[in-house]
Length: 77
Image (cartoon, rainbow, N blue to C red):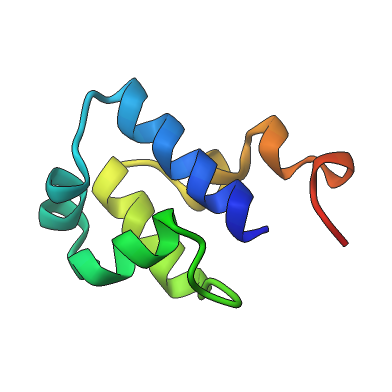
C-alpha cells in the first residue's frame, strides 16, 4: 500500500507539473513527511495525511484512490 501511495503521489506531481516543495506549500504536509512517503519509510500512512495531500492537489480522496495502483491485484497482502 505504501508503495502505491508513493507512486500515486509521483503520478499526480508529474501530471500537474509540480514539485514536492510546491505540494508541501499547498498541502501543509511537512517536507520530511512527504519525503518519507516518497521513500516508503512509513509502516502505514494516515488517512489525514492523504487528505491533506489531496487538498494540495485540489482533488478528492476518492480521486486519489481512483488508480489501477490501488486495485486489489496490484497490492501486496
